[in-house]
Length: 271
Image (spheres, rainbow, N blue to C red):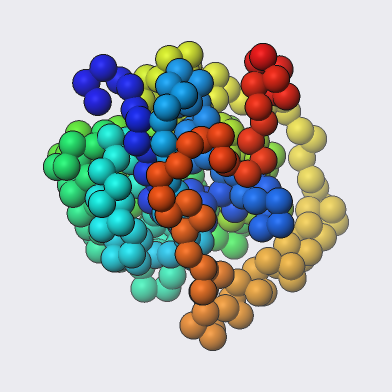
């Protein structure tokens, strides 16, 4: 909206936007999009929020499944974040993936929404076995920036700050942000949107950690591979997805106060 006030926020995407890594399926997932909605609601309590994201979705699936419902909700703010699941696939096509993202940017912007997105960190900094994917990440980020410029989309440049690959920003599976990571992503998008009270503090480094070396480092890699990489590869070989049978957690616009796990102003020290 012209005055910077957003009353109808809709989030599209995959597991990161759904909130995997921040909470769980028992108590509810929070995630950066929920946290961004909370920031919006601090200044405009009447804001309504929908989250159409579903884990495991490729960019083309996000477009096919979520764009039409998002347009029907007529958001004045929309976030579109997808593509990581694509770049992890053997037959990744950066142009095709970015084309799906651009189609969503264009449709939402043409309807009058302010659209925001993210660039992605180098997954090879988190998962040594994924280092060959670095060029894919750079290519996709470049295409996202180009598409965003063409359609006036706001880009939160998470990829450019070393803190985004700090292990503490990531859940134990190294594929999803931790609660701290989701908090910082929300702050990054808020800063890119120039929301009241936002600043660049999200990009500042965390206190240093002693590095893992030798047998401890090797043991951590073996445990991670057995616990997370093996099951992930198994799903790929079977043609399965972690999102099979799942739907959006917030398919309709509703008050931000209904977010599971959200603290009231009194509980989180602001009241």
